[in-house]
Length: 283
Ligand code: SAH
Image (cartoon, rainbow, N blue to C red; front, side, top):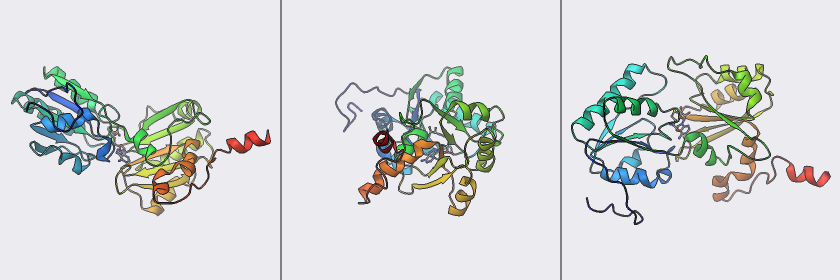
């Protein structure tokens, strides 16, 4: 292939046989792919993709073999090792290998482990970051992960570790005190435990929480709840993973910034949900 069609003119990197490009596919909406990802999709011989990669994205690599390497929810690491070694084999067979992962490959995606295995086997790699669900997924729900009036830091945590349990290494007290906004990946299974840990660590029962499932896809759903009620509300709403759970007052901004509702013709519920304007007027 001499040129990569339909991309802005530029010296796009060429995939070489025997290389593995480890690439983020973003949270779902194919429009959130990077141009580097699209460039890779056009050139790959094989695309090895995860459960969280939106199927429509694979349509952009019609020339490639599509290999599913799905793995959901804290399965044994042997499976992970198999995937990494499969990538090594494909590269050694002289393929141009695109390893496509949901969101960003280096955010709770084990991309680091796969990259390390490749490096240990002398397979050359390129890393293409993607939009992570904990940022882009929340943006599609009208929630800014940082908002000057709310938070000067944000903490991304995983709700379970390799054993499938809530990570023992997480210090909820420290996270609670140190971060006004907490973004939880893979938190659905243990949300009752996580919420009670946060409450025990001093977060308010009334603290706003948003749960965004299948963010950025046509199936996106958003639940607005509180820390005390979130576990029951998630169950009552029948919400299923994948979900991003955001704890903190930044979630209130959705009342103003739910741009998808506004695109459907709905008015913003409150253009000043943090009451800053009113507070300033009365000062
Ligand atoms: N590397 C990915 C995260 C992989 S871990 C990233 O950067 O986004 C898998 C978890 O990511 C899911 O359990 C869920 O918490 C979150 N996630 C990924 N895609 C999502 C989506 N479209 N909507 C909601 N959550 C998503």
